[in-house]
Image (cartoon, rainbow, N blue to C red):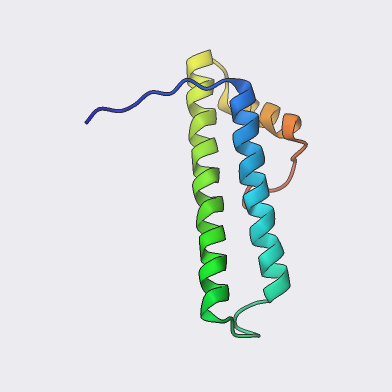
Length: 99
């Protein structure tokens, strides 16, 4: 099975980044609402919900990072410039680790 090449537009990168940002916000919201599991044990349902949200954020973040790299390469641009442009377009200047 071969590698599927997908062309990305800048607008697609912005939408992908917005989706990742929304997923990150959901994880942070849940962490803030539930507290640290070491202080207040979570139920199995809470743990599963949090882990699902975290995996969604991780996957969306990975996908947008890969897409930005592909876009930069295809367009002959510096990847850091593409990332900065996408962050400006989404209004996001936060730490990419989500902390």
